[in-house]
Structures are given as C-alpha cells and as structure tokens.
Length: 72
View 1 (cartoon, rainbow, N blue to C red):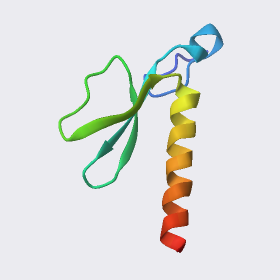
View 2: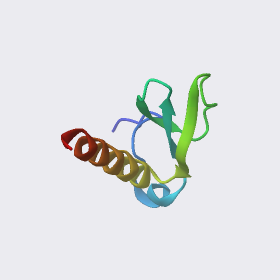
View 3: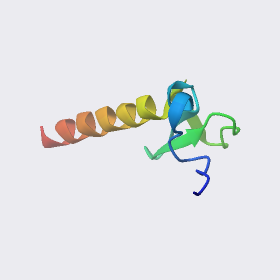
C-alpha cells in the first residue's frame, strides 16, 4: 500500500475534510493545491479550502464555462 501524496484525493473519512483549494494565476492557469501548504506568490485562492472532490468539480465547471465562452 502506498501513501497518497499531498495532491492526491484522500480516502475514507478524510474525503470530506477541507484538504485542498483551487488556485488561479494571472495567466489563467489553475492548480489544485493542498490546503496545508502556503499559496505561492502570484496565485490566488478561487475555491476552498474544501474537500478534494469539491475542488475538482469547481475546476471542471470553470473549464466547461470557458469552453462554452470560447465557442460563442
């Protein structure tokens, strides 16, 4: 059994804990970031801290919205 890294989704009861946040920089890049780690310079928190799954859903919604806007 391997231990998950800080960027991996936690299992079991920790799956609902606020373990991650979604970051975005001025270039429009997104990052799923561990909540315990300081936010790097040049990045802003746009969602969270929240459970890993919630952060993934936020990024997926934002990506769909951006794709829809680009298609217009």
